[in-house]
Length: 215
Image 1: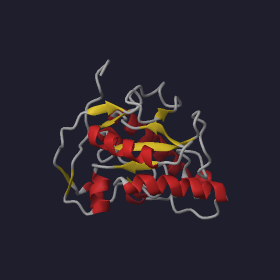
Image 2 (image 1 turned 180 degrees about the vertical axis):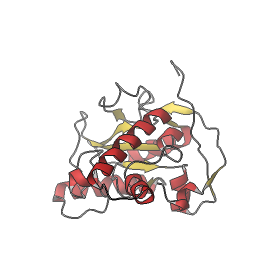
Image 3 (image 1 turned 90 degrees about the vertical axis):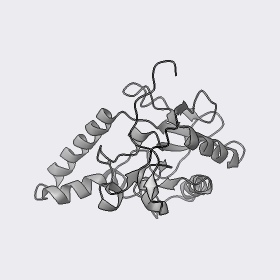
């Protein structure tokens, strides 16, 4: 996410509002991140429509389970700083540029991060009562913690986990979202990374303000 090919992408703002995926009935949401971020289920309107289509493409008994969408910039900064400190401790000889490259493979720099734009979502699959399915690693597992199983193209997964992961990839790709390949759960449409990955000349969603209470 810190690569110049991403940071150099311009933005022509779409001005699409944020809408609540959960109240709209598009998908369930986990409660695991609500305490620190009450806006976990808000996303740009156009992305919401694409996710609604993806949900309809899933087989009976399988649904999308949201983890987090919109993330305030200050929370993104906290995540970046916390992971950077961990990487610094484990790699004390790294220079500043090399450290930034290593950190940004997993946590995006706040200035180009997709989540504050409302265009990116962390999600997984669940059964009909909301129990998470096995996709090979925990959501938010780091490369270090998961022995690389967090990478979307990771090998060595169980047959069940590999099938679930391929299902998620299939329906989200079908509706035009793009994946960040170090995180199988992270997908977006409209941010700088999406523009770079799809060859678009510009992103359509810049960082935006948090939704107001009751919106």
